[in-house]
Image (cartoon, rainbow, N blue to C red; front, side, top):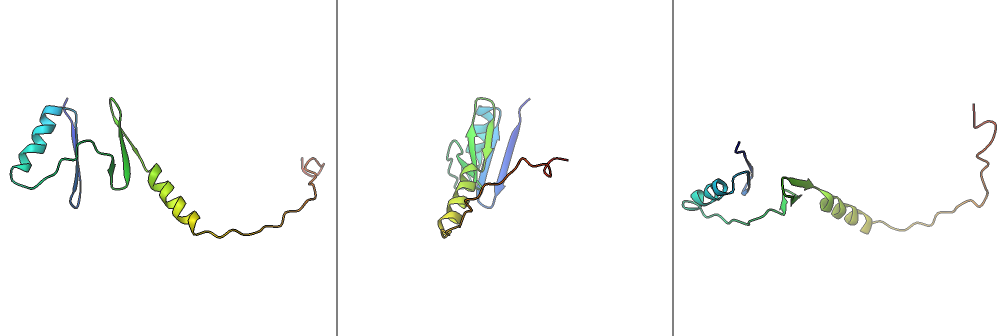
Length: 97
């Protein structure tokens, strides 16, 4: 069974298929009429990291999440926090039922 997926967002198109010959044909036919650029293996699509494996694709937003984290943390200010030096008695008769 041959399967294809066509993901389109504005001017970005991601074409995924199980038959490489038919996939190449689907890429070259529209390029005869329209100006297209084949970027070969996809690495990112809509801020989603694409990692090909032998039988599938792994989609991840790991880098996107890290970018947000670093952006937020870079604007944070350090604050001194006073810590108590007294010890808590966690094992008490009131703690357990």
